[in-house]
Amino acid sequence: MTNPVFSSLPTSIFQHITMLALKHDALNLGQGFPDEDGPLSLRQVAAKQLLDGPNQYPPSKGSAVLRQAVAAHAARFYGLSYDPEDEVVITSGGTEAVTAALMAMAGAGDEVVMIEPTYDSYRPMAEAAGAVVKSVKLEPPGWRLTEDALRAVVGPKTRAILINSPHNPAGRAFSREELEVLAKVVSGTDIVVICDEVYEHLVYDERPHVPLATLAGMRGRVLKIGSAGKIFSLTGWKVGWVMGPRELVSVVTKAHQFLTFTTSPALQLGVAHGLTHEMDFPIQTTRRLQKNRDILAAGLTKLGFAVQPCEGTYFLTAGISKLTNEKDFAFCERLIREAGVALIPLSAFFKSGTPDSYVRFAFCKQQALIEQSLDRLEKYFAKQ
Ligand code: PMP
Image 1 (cartoon, rainbow, N blue to C red):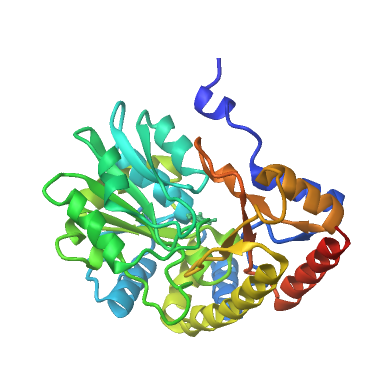
Image 2: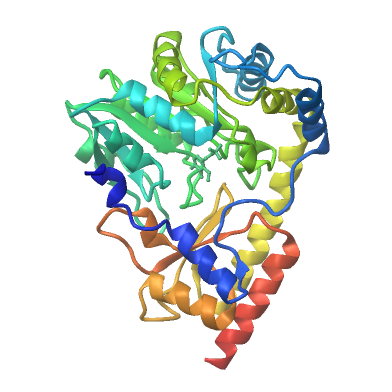
């Protein structure tokens, strides 16, 4: 007997789309990783450490130099104060950070509220911990978070709310007003909010990233998650962190201790260097990606896609109902086969009650690839 949480999972949509894209030599705007590696200096620092050592276990909660750099980053960008000694824990990526936070906050029978569409690891890891997932659905057009939708699922058994802002795949950076609604709903309860903020620096149009922890009364109940992979375009590094009040972080640290115990010392040192010396990189990346987003949005609008607002992340969503009667999945498969462009059907991010006429484009790529993809789509639709 295997665990149904995992055995019942379908093949990942990313794997399916990528295999199909390879088979048909399609340009891949499906997978959400950059096609250029981040700063050389981080890699040099990590390489030197790898060669010179030591290469033994760093402390389970993370190398002191990285914990200090993570705390200093939160102070510099958001005015948030965390003690690097016991209010920061380094994890093997944002994914492990979310898992450790979920396991630390919720167990058998507890309810965890998530925002659908959801990043794919959230639900299975909460369910594997024995928790029951309740979803708040964001609705197109606009993908806005509302008080009514939140109140409909938050109840006496809710132990945690897991929110992702900026949001993959919706491309939303939740506004201060939306976050204030969330703050209002949890105030007076003992609900913890796990904030997956791995795209914190990828917010466009000069909008500020607003961490929930900066809202009045929230710091004491927020676990704030970050990822160096996203900040420095080094997604394979899998170095992340959780920050929060010490009484919550101490329990997250215990879960992390048995998930991975620790993270490569060389990569931790490289990331510490990045957070202290290379913070211009994410700013430049954001400018570059904003341009990609604009090119993509304009091109898709011209083709008849209903482009949704994209305020942050690597992703833009668009409605397809003016272009086809097909469901998103069939449409994406057809575009790979016939137009040579790969996208992700948005229904893959929902458990049920899904809008099935939206797709997700990843624009964290070279501008030329975006332009080539638009060119292929334009030629293809012109023949229809
Ligand atoms: N959270 C979200 C919302 C993501 O999109 C991703 C990466 N796609 C992660 C977490 C994972 O971060 P990491 O690679 O650091 O594990």
